[in-house]
Length: 204
Image 1 (cartoon, rainbow, N blue to C red):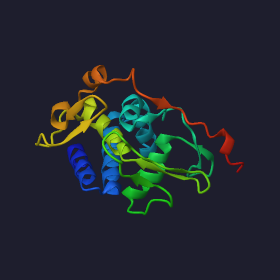
Image 2 (cartoon, rainbow, N blue to C red):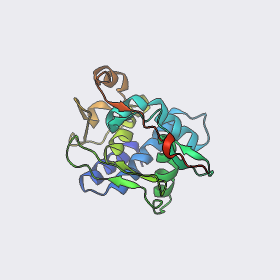
Image 3 (cartoon, helix red, strand yellow):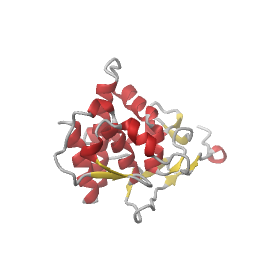
Image 4 (spheres, helix red, strand yellow):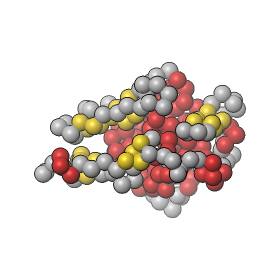
């Protein structure tokens, strides 16, 4: 399946409020794009995470509100170590489970936005889990559209689009144009809060 198909299915699933499906296809788009961007990296998880890290500026803008690059969440990763970052959560909790047909771990999911511009998510310290806002799906999808390695992609319709706080991106007009997008994105005025969990950090 082409990257354009993953993006189309992700956006269509968002419109129908099937957010797990939308997240799955967004993750598959990241998978496919990262494979093309980093052919020298054999491990799927390594290149998946690298793609997110190298596009944190766009992802944070689209996600909204949080400093995802520096925030460390007080949950265990797949190796049992406490302290997990956004790229690990997306890969380990969402991508790996959804792509293999498994249920998401208890407490993990994607929450429907309240309305345009107002997102919601939940962090459960006691049960070591969290939900992501609906905007996370768009935050993962747009960098795939903008990646130069996907410049040859096309959905074939101008009905599919993304929005950041001030701009509108018709997907088929923006494939591969990451440099142009970064020039018009309003990074200067975005809110980015680094969350501090030191007072609730588990001892083991």
